Image (tube, rainbow, N blue to C red; front, top):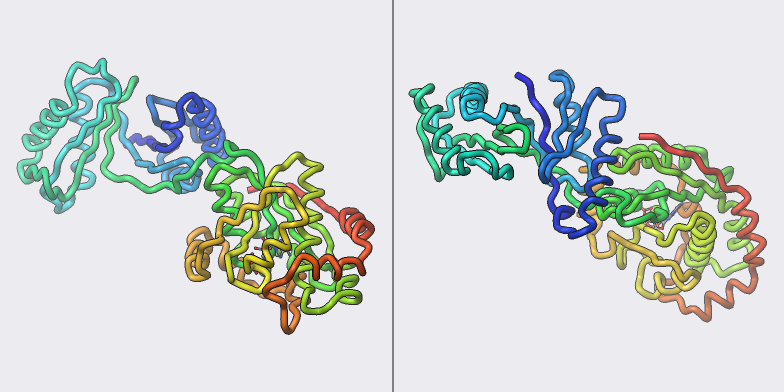
Length: 387
Ligand code: ATP
Ligand code: MG
């Protein structure tokens, strides 16, 4: 049976005169999600309709259901705008799904107000026809075993019986750009996914300490980008070495401030990179109180080196909730692969949890900050990670 995929979006339809902008971005992202597949996507009143060859419908549905901005999707059967055709399609659909189920109802939505019958009239007529054609069926308006939905569009009618949830959110790109600080841990990829969910397009920055750490941490960052860009398309991955900065901090500064000082250097480098590329916000995987460097005091002292907005989508989430999300978006198996993060090499035995700015500034007088930053920036490598 020929079928199409109906793609529904909610929030973006509410955004007044930005609506076109949002719809165009969503359409671009939907097309990108099925790039390489023979899928055509058209706009109809308040929805998109994708047409795919029968053997690719399930794959197309899976890809499209990951696109932010999509609220729900259905495999739909098209019919011409004619009651006879709609009734015939309804019988075929009921036969396909009924298999032992004997109660049903019909719900109609009619965005095309030129169609001569009202929604209740269509539901009633189609329902009556189904009863006539299938004597075993009964109508139950309250607890039907299955429901046939009919939508009367501008050019065609669509019939379906199931909804698949999309991820919701806003189309990637409509909220601008941000730089994700991507470690090899569990949290930061989830933070990136959440930022993308609210329409941010993301580039990633991974700090490594090669050759102190193995090349595996960089491979992990690449694999994490590949996993999250299923939701947002190709993304640049920047890699910067912290090796000489770590050496300088370890040699010249108090051990218990090590992580805080390193984080401040990371933020300074991120700030430089963003200035080069006109990006206005950073995204991190910090969660309040999770570790010593994520107390209010630590975060304040770390953020003090930049005027950029630092977004922390996981701030109020528990580790358990973060892990559940990481599993759902499939970053978890990559994140738990063993590797050495630049920071795991660097964890002090007794990290301070309440650093003060004056103490940190004092400690930093022992560092030639500008030279260290320049040297690290020289190690910058950028590659495009395709989906
Ligand atoms: P994650 O699981 O994301 O590594 P975490 O709980 O281990 O987080 P930290 O190691 O304290 O937390 O790091 C806090 C945040 O700093 C990370 O979520 C990430 O955004 C950023 N970060 C830490 N290490 C790196 C790194 N090597 N490269 C880029 N960003 C990093
Ligand atoms: Mg980490």
